Length: 197
Image 1 (cartoon, rainbow, N blue to C red):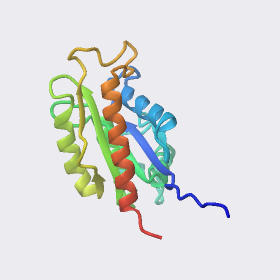
Image 2: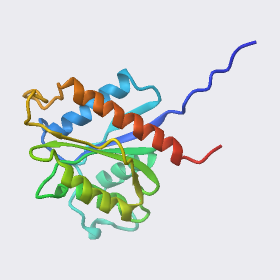
Image 3: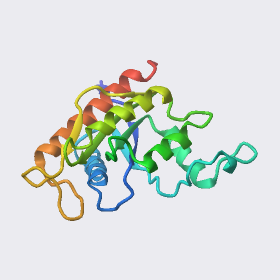
Image 4: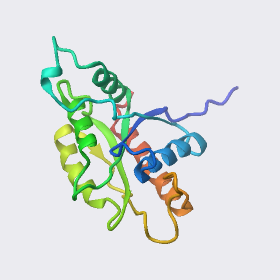
């Protein structure tokens, strides 16, 4: 007889970054997460979703019940995902305008964020972006996003040893391991939230 090996279902993760800069440390966190899902985390399939093509939220752009093409494409990617990874830089103790814009477009009826598991990661000075987490979690309450509680990931990018190279790529092995733990937690929480068959 052949043994049947139970395997975890593949979880689709949409990864978005609140910074538009190519060498952003937060975008570097997303690149690391993408590498980790390919190399060492079975059952997670991640796709980076670029938010830079989104126009600023203007409901006058919604015509005959349709969104602008860039918004439609973005909303479809979020809808297809099982969970969300957000790299959220901290600007003035809050999230960035491009990230808030993306959150707002995808929350237009019907809200495509609803009932998805999510995780927040950030890198920066001082508290490493931790204050943006608090604001983003509050926004997530209204959007029906369900954030993992632990582990939290906010990285002071300027404390020795060096965390990033000059292109914004994460090079610190301890931080990579912390990122892996976030992804494993997101995977487990997503599975818990999915309906049982």
